[in-house]
Length: 470
Image (cartoon, rainbow, N blue to C red; front, top):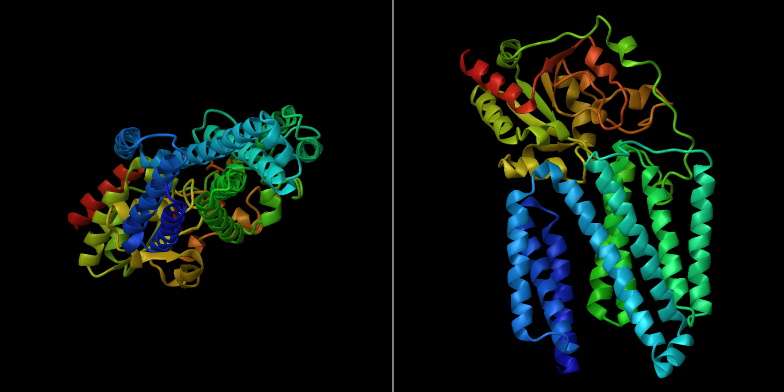
């Protein structure tokens, strides 16, 4: 293909990527933004395949059809609660693709005497190759650990072992050393794969040290890593659109990670190094028996309906439990019912509620809850004292007062939605079990708190039925 046409299409794809990301910043334009980004990716992949004479039109069309079919099946069958795991895997696939593509290009170049001689003096390309293998391998294996944790197969919380930090630092030093050796002695292609193997261990060590409450930050960070690995691979292949798209993903992921760190009062440097720079995590003071004994007050749908009958302002705090129960549509029904009775209903969204950034926003948008009813934590916290009833629906760690009162808690310092300030708090939860951070919650025993022990969807359905009977 003509080089001018290829670069023109690449430029068009880059513009579509930027417009797509801009569209994703608002719910009303999110679908259009997603479609623009998908179109940009299709253009970039198709032109690259044609330019390099890798595949003909027929195979590209067949690939598009197979990909569309797989995407449609995934969209229909993957539960919203499993989306974080799916995103983690997608991040990992991007990382391992960078490792393999950069490694294949490196092996191919070193297999040709002419190309090997040219590459031997090209420090920039060798450095990009090493960066692609290192970051890609960390991304892939870190994402696998994130998947295992999110799927609750094992390693649900932060994993620690003796000399953990020393092991992490030693592995990081070994990985960088192997990368430097590869750049200095490229004829030894085995160094690339040894570096990728060391980076795999590093990816595991960095991610196992992250606790459950920090998993949304990890997802955002791994997303950024996958973009950086792709961008580095773009330098290896001298592919402009891969450099641009990878840079966009890497930069947006870092910005999101920075926002998430701020929301959790975490250091970005500490997250980047898998907690290696943080003080040793402690345990929350006291067990749940000490906190809850004789203080927890259970309630029912009828009692909550009576509270809601006199409420002028209601705030719902959604969490992962709402996603598991698929209660978002029933929550919308309760919202409409209360608004018809003259109450104001809003949703307090914590930046890390759920298992991935924006998890609650997506769920509520799926139920067609108006976006202007979603209030960010910093906006609604000062107004919670004027709220009559707060309904905490499957959220635990994001409303846990221990974040503010116990410096030894794993979530110490994390800003929370301070529902204790509301006149009455109704906590919908199946039991008094700990949340993803694995710590008890004193809110359950607060004087103004009532525990509604039920599945999230059933509980809201019972509230709706009881309100209708008033």
